[in-house]
Image (cartoon, rainbow, N blue to C red; front, side, top):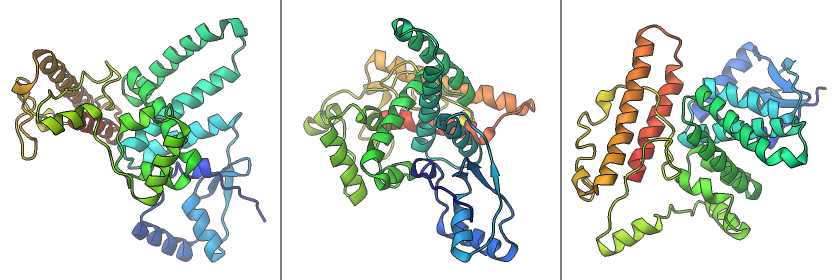
Length: 323
């Protein structure tokens, strides 16, 4: 019998189907057999976990196809590309995938580095710039977003080293934890990472407000901090704009943050002039990006509209969270 190896790190990158979709797939395979082959690297399953589980449960035969990779990192990159193209991903999943992709390519480059230890520091700086730039074009986000995503994925992996279930909850969106928290997680003391992972797994984790916001909430004063333009600062965490209709954004850049129910009076006019300019710039950049992508789509160019829309949604959600 074929020995199929289940790799937990790879498996967690392939989101589980919801109950109804799984049942429909199960019924189809029971009636028609497993028509699509499972994909293996060596003996490790890298695509087809749901089909594999159903076939094993009901003793249904299946076929396999093997793909050769020179390293685990190359297999990981293949999984990431495959999932990004065909899955509905949460904002954190998408950032995690981009960050993993960056880290995997960096590791491959480090393995292939033929330069001496003396030149390692400067060479790595070159790799960082070229890799981040290359991936920023591939995923249609900024170079800074890719760097932040690498920090976020390191944080997610740090949680996963303590609890795979906590990692799964983060990636599936079952727990509310912001990107900025994940970006800083891997640099926290080990005991704090363990505590957070334990709370997430137990379902008791509560998102903490940043200290500056908590202080403002406590005394009724303090100035809201608007985000800078996407990709210009590590203080902003949204993915960079892709497309969407600019009419979905406030069409008046002079007043991009009108009062709304529950906003607590956080009006554009309440911000300092520097913050007003930064927020207006961020919204303007999002609008311009949306327009550019819609024009490309209208011209019939090859645009992955689903992925691009998700990038814009991430960007706008990131701006909203920081307001």
